[in-house]
Amino acid sequence: MEPTKKQDPAERPLSVEIDEATARGIYTNLALITHSETEFLLDFLFLQPQAPKTKVLARLVSSPVHAKRLLWALQDNIQKYEARFGSIATGENHGEVRPSGFYQ
Image (cartoon, rainbow, N blue to C red; front, top):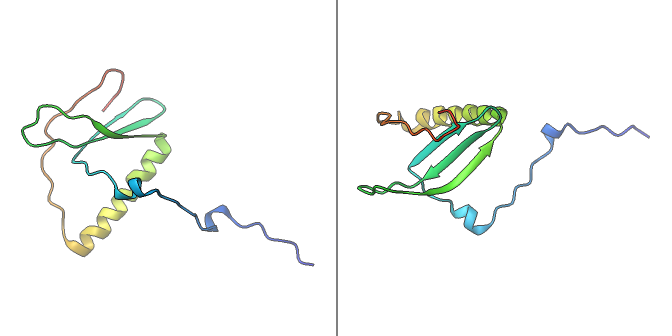
């Protein structure tokens, strides 16, 4: 009998399930990103034109390692998008919001 090989976890397919509400997604047009020493917080909001107020629709909390991996994945996907569809026009950064105890 041959000894069984241990399969590398990176080679195993990942099975992902998603419920219907999550699959629909949430449209956001504003993200606030803050961090402490141990985690990054990404708050997603929808800011309506002329509205003086909005609220957080979703918050992602991540370790610094995973936040950096997310950055790399976004950079890779944006490069692929722009290679296929052309450059994405970006506006200016219109100010910073700094919640107490966090750095932006």
